[in-house]
Image (cartoon, rainbow, N blue to C red):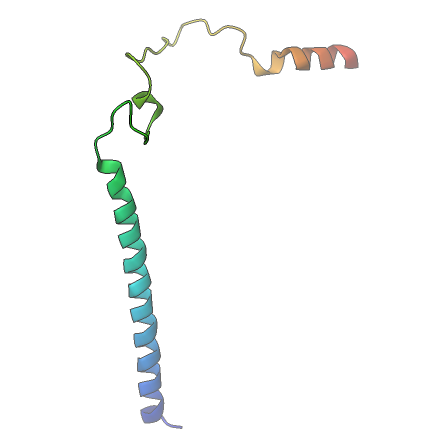
Length: 89
């Protein structure tokens, strides 16, 4: 086998790989594009599709200031852990 016999086989293999890769890429991009179109339609509170939780919340969202007391949220001082450490001590 010489180069003139191998060249058409290599060209056909590369052409097949490139065309199948392009087809799969176009298929995936097309699916992602079509799936993304459903997110562009207008939604209301009565809609079955919810993109974020704020769409279902009523009224305005109020955030706590940085210096607001948070209450007993120390994860290392939960009643379960305090009970376990008192038993081990």
